[in-house]
Image 1 (cartoon, rainbow, N blue to C red):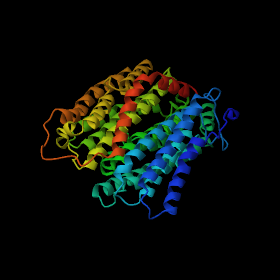
Image 2 (cartoon, helix red, strand yellow; image 1 turned 135 degrees about the vertical axis):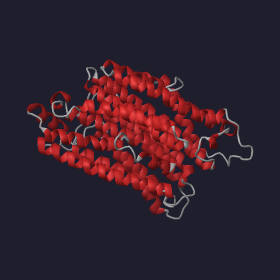
Image 3 (cartoon, rainbow, N blue to C red; image 1 turned 90 degrees about the vertical axis):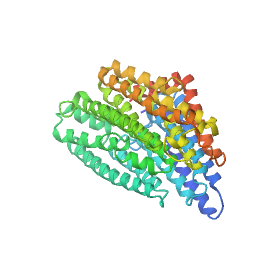
Image 4 (cartoon, one colour; image 1 turned 90 degrees about the horizontal axis):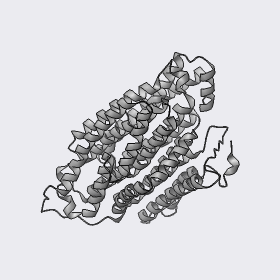
Length: 492
């Protein structure tokens, strides 16, 4: 433990999420009748950016970039791995807050909306720093409970309520399954600290009880990352939720699930010790292949753009699962670092795509591919931004998604998972087809001459453009992000 190297409290980025949520609720309490949507959105965005700034400062400050702080008797660990993800959560939260300014402007309970976003962000940050299975579970619930409410925010919309109900029921079942798994792991090892579990596993003979516990714990992470076999809540939840919430859940929440999964499976369950009981690397490899294939093929058959993005986010989860499976290889820190880098870039790309859908919903254009026909003639700047994030999601070299996929696939290949990389390349080629359908509709197809766009919502435009610009700028800054991720992964 080298906590003395931190000047500010190491948990400051996590505190900033929670304190900003309280500040948002305080503003609403002091001025319940005032029109304050702009103030609430700005407060949320600034609080999230402050968390990102402090996390980035810790990561870049000489003398602290390799420090590890373990308060609460090692139940929490603040290290570069956690700070990397906290920085990502802050960026996505800020983008969502800015875009929400227009989306929720005429809706009730705005303070509750922004507070729920920040509380979910607090839970995501806690998932990144959790070093104990009990802390992981509590953090996961702190993400899930506000997320259920956010999906149901449009409570008079049938799709929103249906999506929230399915999300809640699957989430409750997954949480119960994970909690039972945690209890089995505790029964087999006598501890819930990740390091303690690893010591017990390597010094003893793992039994079937531990193996079953490991599988059940994995179910909780598969739910949070919208991976097979607990992925089926995602299309309805993402389609029914307010589009900024869909952006938030499909990028930040998914990254939080992977952050906790990487730490738990690399620290607590060393494959060399537990493989005789449960080969979780093979489990994740099979699930990666199924998840990316199911997600991409389902996305290719959709006629609704928002639902297509929901299924494509399942496919993207499959790519990152490759990294989790390949941890068992000989270059594990490279694979984890590559997965972290892809998640960071994905945060910009996927958030931008869903925020564009929010912009189109704000205009009342519709959700099908046909509704997007000729949209570029009316909104060329926004459509250009959407084109950039979609092609980057497909892995074309217009944004950092090309490089992040390349290093992920290359590192997985080097770790001995060439067959999985081959499946991923086929799926990436398929994704070019369905992402291109949106681009074709916007830029090639003829427009309906009898419709004009009602205004230029500044917040939504800013969110979409910022995500697209960030995706492009990461091409130039990719080396720094990748090196930071590699360094953070090497300290796990």
